[in-house]
Length: 72
Image (spheres, rainbow, N blue to C red):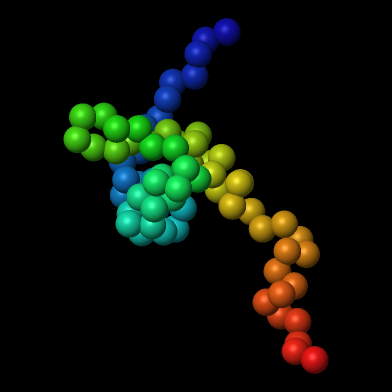
């Protein structure tokens, strides 16, 4: 079995994959929702981590009822 090669993304590419701005990506990294790696003076992201984060952001059915229920 050969180890998988890690595909590294820069901040702009990782943010684009998630459909967010780099500033929002920095916030998600700071909150621990997306792992980031400091390499010298730059941040890098594993493509597999970004793909996993995307799945973790999935909304569970029935969790948004408070947004569309009519007031009594």
